[in-house]
Each structure stands twice: as C-alpha cells, then as structure tokens.
Length: 222
Ligand SMILES: C[S@@+](CC[C@H](N)C(=O)[O-])C[C@H]1O[C@@H](n2cnc3c(N)ncnc32)[C@H](O)[C@@H]1O
Image 1 (cartoon, helix red, strand yellow):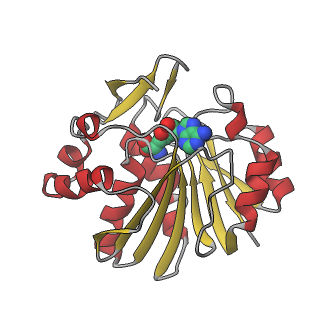
Image 2 (image 1 turned 45 degrees about the horizontal axis):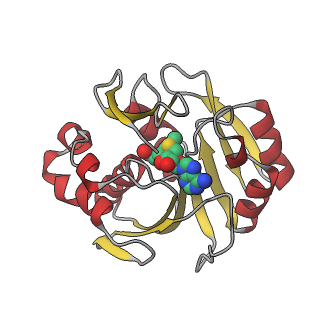
C-alpha cells in the first residue's frame, strides 16, 4: 500500500494512505492516541508480570515501541505478536520521529522492531520479545499462537475503509484466543463494533477518547 508521511498535531508522524483516504493514527496526535488507547486503557490494566500481547496491524511500529519503552519502567515482560499484511520498509521507518520525540537514546531499539526477522521470536530487550507475522488478519489459517493472549491492541483501519477487518468472525476468534480477564482495546467506538464484541462474549465499556475523539472501547473477557 502506497503511503505518505505526515505530521500530526502533537508533532509525531503518521502515514496517510491515498488509496483508502485513511491515516494510520489520529491526525490530532499519533503518540497521544497510541498512549491513550493502547497503553493507558489496555496495557496498564493488566497486572500480570508476564504479558502475552497481540496487535492487529504493526504499521509504523509505534504501539510496539511505546510498549517496549513502558516495559523499561514497569520491568514487566511482554511477548508481543503483531500481524501485518503490508509492512513498512526500514527506509521509511528510519524517517519516523518517534524516538526523537520520546527518547533519542532508544532509536536503535525502534529500528530493531522494524529490521527484526518475520515469523520468529526476536529478543529486542530482555523484557520485550517480538514476533511479527506477515499475514492477512482476516484469514486465520496459519496463525497458531503458542498461548492465549492477555492484551489485544485492535488497530485496523476504520470500518468504513476496511469493513472486512471488523467482522463477527474475527472478534469471535480473538475471544477464543484470549485468557480470562484479557483486555482488547480499540480506538473505534462504533455501535456496530461494540455489539460485535458483546456478541463474541466480551464485556464492553466506552471510555473517553484522546483529543479529537469522543469515545474508545475497552472489551474484557470475564
Ligand atoms: C490503523 S493502521 C495501524 C498501524 C499500527 N498499529 C501503527 O501504530 O502504526 C492499520 C494497519 O493494519 C494493516 N493492515 C491492513 N490490512 C490488513 C490485513 N488484512 N491484515 C493485517 N494487517 C492489515 C495496515 O497495513 C496498517 O499497518
């Protein structure tokens, strides 16, 4: 998918996809949105010392990078599996300003997220292990996770742009692949998505969104 780098309102980069007329993050702030939706509403609500995490859509690697930085403070261990159909090249990734804004000393780790091999576990740091899978998340064949997930970052393009990424079948499968008390968060608060998550079995809360977004969703498997 062809994309163009743009700056969002908090100064951090995102990608714009002309073919879909869609951004990878909120134009009100990419870092701000990722921190709010995935770390604050998701990761920080899991009290396990070892967390098995699944991300749908690796993209710029921003969610992975923020999670890695978080483990440096929390000392928790995260096993981070991320599914991505259209990987961003290392040449493009080198242009992103995330480490410059967050912690320039961590640029090498950010780039390792991108340069690490696909389909195998890579130790990026002792507390952060990454397995990227280049695959179509709508086709579950070939995705055999080793354990159940504690956290899911559901970060697909919007339902209006990619309706096949927001189906009952996908949410049913994610529910089965999750531990009891597992949390799924997403920036998308559409009623249809909330109802699909509920039908899958999740308890769903609407939470205040980051700037520019009224609400987000947090689903918990109880
Ligand atoms: C909203 S972006 C979010 C990306 C990422 N979490 C980030 O922080 O940059 C959605 C991502 O889903 C990926 N994607 C699109 N269709 C997909 C599919 N069928 N299977 C897996 N990933 C897909 C896109 O390439 C893109 O990286």
